Structure formats: structure tokens, C-alpha cells
Picture: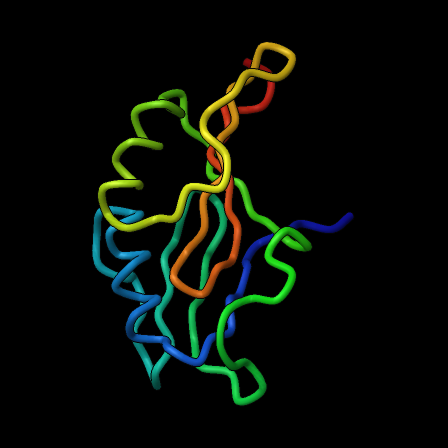
Length: 118
């Protein structure tokens, strides 16, 4: 059995991305070492760091997305717009769940979602 425990975002601008995710998670990184920044989020871990082969904005940002669960999709959506997230899709309902899609400074998409099973 596999367990997805972490997600890494490679970037050409690790400090700007770390500052953005500090605002997303409303707290400093739990790990800051050697140009890498990371947050324990729920049972997972999100790492941000410089990657030598990443330059500029994401060319296919919809290819891989991660979801952040919250019961307050609409409220968190508004807060994240205020801290600089780019709106990709306003909150919408699908099968009784709420979803919204945003992007970080590199253009990577992430979604806010109602927790599974609610």
C-alpha cells in the first residue's frame, strides 16, 4: 500500500514562492534549510525549492494540481485572492462539494475543496 506523504514544487524563485505559501498557510515554513522551505499540512508535507531546470511560469499548470481541503472554500478563496493568488476558477459546486482553482506566483494550479465525504 502506498501513502502520498509529500509534494515538491521546483521553482526558479524559491524565496518569492516561500513568501506566497507562508501567506497561504498563514504561518512560516516548518522547515527552512539550504534554500528549501516546507510546511506540514494536515498529514502531508509541501516542499518548495530551487530547481536548476525550472525557469519562468509553468507551461502546463493544469497537468498536476494539489488540493487543500477546507469547509470554508468561499471564505478561504477570498482570503487567498487578497494575499496574491491568481484566480483560475471562482468557487463552484459539484456533486454537493465546493471547489475553487487558484495559481501561485509560478502559475502552478492548486484547488480549495470541501473535505471528501462531507
